[in-house]
Picture 1 (cartoon, rainbow, N blue to C red):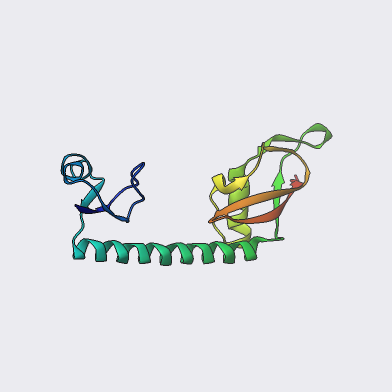
Picture 2 (cartoon, rainbow, N blue to C red):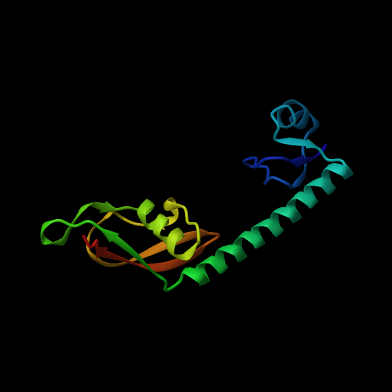
Length: 150
């Protein structure tokens, strides 16, 4: 029986592929568990359309990520923070603080989880932070932590 795989199936194939399998395997395992459906012309055409739509969507998302990376690369984000003795920060500058500053200063919204920050920043100075924008696209920005004027 010819089936269109709806999900990745180990030792059989990837989602969207059309495979010939034993009738019993299709009727008793693949179809009832939602791994496949019987391959009709309509089902095959539907999968081809979905695959093409996915390719277009991924290409659009990658282009948007590349555009965002071009806007952010080399940018400097200034964050002011309260400091105590010896210019040590009260608390720290976290990924959320950096993401908020990026949105405020560049009007580009970045998820805090996309920031590659090994640990929160606890001292004044300039730091380089890498941003993973998805689809293997990265950008690097400078974060300048300055003393808040009283």
